[in-house]
Length: 171
Image (cartoon, rainbow, N blue to C red):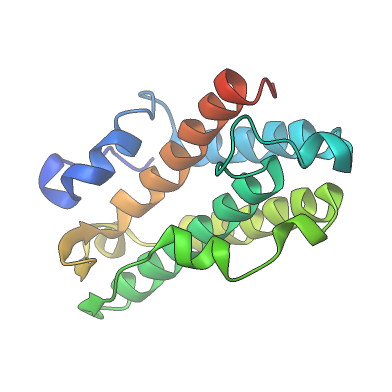
């Protein structure tokens, strides 16, 4: 079982994600979220997934695309730090979303891509040793541990699921 990281293992910004993760087996949580999120998104029509609740806000497809980008970014950082690399650049979510067209993709394809990405990351996380989980590096000018990124994957998803439920009425 991967224990929850201490606040010294992640940035103040990431604390919002880590705090959303309940005291549970984080890999099992990632597996459950993978299935429930896949079911949530794959049942939507493309019309429903093109919805945005206010001008200038992302569509549901863009939110899911952002979730995929962030999952990959957190996983890459975890992989790199697990192998003892020490510094990586920041990640600007708006640059990523604004430089692709998630709205041109089907919501079913995006849902399947999210599920495949998460499944791959679960296998990677399961293979980390205890020593690797505690390794650290610098990302976005902050210290992070490998296990912090594991918790951030789950917390980031929980954060967006809450927003989708409250603002987009998707649940």
